[in-house]
Length: 241
Image (cartoon, rainbow, N blue to C red; front, side, top):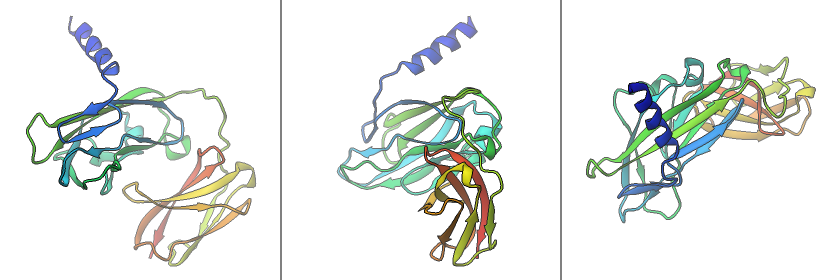
C-alpha cells in the first residue's frame, strides 16, 4: 500500500497545474521536464506580483539526483548561482531580492551531463525547489520541480574535443585556447566557481581562440567549449590572477 501511495503521489506531481502562482510571485511552470546529455539551462523565471520589492527565499527540498549529476548542477536566482553540495542538503534557505517589474527575474537550473564533465549515470531523476516570500504568510509559497532525463542514446553523436590546451595558466589579461578543428567549436563560455556564466566568446578561428579576461575578478574559472548545436565538447579550468 505504501508503494502505491508513493507512486500515485509522484504521478500527481507530474500532472500538476502548469503555472505556479503564490500571492507574491509566479513562475511559468511548476514542473519542467527535459532531456540532455550535455549542458542545458532550464529557465523558470520569477515575476514579482507585489507593488514593492520582494525578498524570495528558496531551497531544494527533495532530489534523487545521482552524485555525478549533483556535482554538475546549479540553480541561479536573480542574485547568484548555487551549485553542487550547496544545493543538497541545504542547511538554510538562500534569498534574493526581486524588484518591482513586469519583466521576470532570473530563476533557472543549469546542468552539465556531458561525459567530459565526469557524468556517467543515465536515467530520469528529479529536483524539487520550494520558494517563499520571506516576509509573507507561510502559505505564500510555490514549488518548482525539474525532471531531467539522460539517455544512453541520442539523436546525434557529439564529437568530443580531443587535445585542448589553455595558456598561460594562471592568466592575467588574456587566455589562449587551442583545440581540435574536427570538434567544430563555435563558442567558448566562461563560468565562475559557483557556476555563473560570466562571458561568452565567439570562435572565429577553426582551432584556436584568444579570450580577453582582463575585467574578470581574480579567482578560479571554467571554460566550456561549445559546438554549433550548443553541446559542450570540452571543459577546462583556469585561474585568473
